[in-house]
Length: 556
Image (cartoon, rainbow, N blue to C red):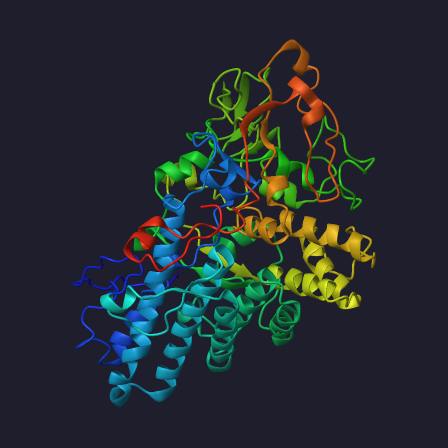
């Protein structure tokens, strides 16, 4: 049974400033934080997804939503009034303000709270605050730096602090958390932050900021702890069966019974039209084409790849992530083929009209694809999505370790082993069974970098990591400068070429190119990314209207 730890505290003080200087979690600093229960309530309040979610996959080239055409990130229109920017900033500083208030007042409960409990709760709060700052500096660069509560009047004089100074603080706080948090908890508290969580955030933050030695050291500590292990099944990890897996380092519990879930609209966007959905939130063709063939080669180099049967002879993570054509999915055979007007439904035990082809339903999947990863078979019946939200898992640590070692020029057997462990699990075998999966053996730095980057992309779709990978690899203007491609409208000509007219060229950076296919593919939306400014997000305009001493990032 899942235990939900975040309890929304009663708000009696309103905030008029976007740094949330009067935190909503604080009923009154004069009387609150007076005992263990109140300390735990304050900490538990920050175990909420609004404070933990990774980046939106729609900010990347992995996913596209039919109804949005483009968002500000992939549309190149991001500005200081953008809602995503404001929400990200506000939620981060809400969490920071609440952590600062807790740390400033926690000693009021020292007389009636065990010292070991006080220390653990302090470590949790310092970890949470450090995590918020790590997210802020990787998205905005220099930001206001607050480590204790401030008055509204004091806030008007706050300016931006160097991201390097804040990064040093983040690492120090994460070290404190790692030293004072337990490695594991009992089953009833399995989702609380641990020593491994602190080290994992440190490894990710160091990777994102190019601190390779720190990233390697932190990732190596997680690996050597032997606390975590890859889940046996890749596909099951993202369903209810995987919610207690040892692979999960940080995950936020969600449960319909606790009223923590996504509603019908989200569910319907992600499921097929035959199953009662909209088929609107979609995998991209870009993602589909980067999965290797089972010989370990990209599709434009492999003799095993056939564009007429694009799911065959491919990395098993492809069919675990994207619904394979001509397979039963949510009770209906899924095929977007323009001539498949009727399909068999195992749910209804008869042939039914195929609402997932645009020859029948104009709004069937525009890319031709549907998500399979993380979608439970109960979604169409419940119209509820309450999967636990995965923030960091062990596979990321293995690939972080490998990448950091590569960047340090330390390519050795441990690098290959880290990559191969992730790859072998995808094939359902052990890393030692090298004849049963395409084990990586190359040690050339350039070749290994391509493999590592491709491995991250096919391992983590829908987990919110792709956007920051594009940013830190300086590939955003290339990947997000290409159009979103979909299946063409049905004609006699393209029926003969269905589903794909040929083998997609893929460049040295792993970016597909569809420009040579002409009308055999359909441009659904044009992405755009302004490299002169978008590698950093703008400081929200509302913040600068309140405090003109906070400067803006270039180009905004």
